[in-house]
Length: 240
Image (cartoon, rainbow, N blue to C red):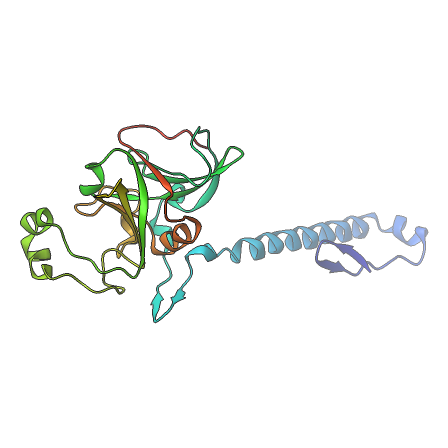
């Protein structure tokens, strides 16, 4: 038995060299047939390998307490907006969150020239703050109340929610929220999930900084109360 890759090929050996030399055409035909067979095996192998491509497991369905977060169709999202570890040059200490609203990226500084990068969607409220802050509160499945500006701007959409909305899959904050403070003052700036993952990488009408729900859960698990946050408006991130 001869073997190439995953394909087994049975090669019939001639009874004598004289028989082979007497039938050169038959010999060439056999070689050609073997080459075709082997090339067919190589093509099948390539097809099998490419056929098992699946969405990143990071964005699969996720059971979180009493809620089941749906899987995300990543084909609708720019690959650059998906969670990934990247090279990142910064003087910020490990554990700092750097938000580059223009690039639509959030970085969690890991040290040694690396950072975990997340794609973000930026709402109007997300453009209203720049500078540094501290995470002083973290919430799972947070309660949400639209701001006065949101209710005035889109009364049909938010007016009936003046009393707020309990945490859940329909809540615009998603499964997690990080609340930013300067001293004891709430900046009203939030990092949170979303009910619209397809908007990640773009500008949205309302909200602060939104991440894919699976991503905000990942980020939430990595940061602590007291973590530093730097918000950059109109800049370019130094990453690759």
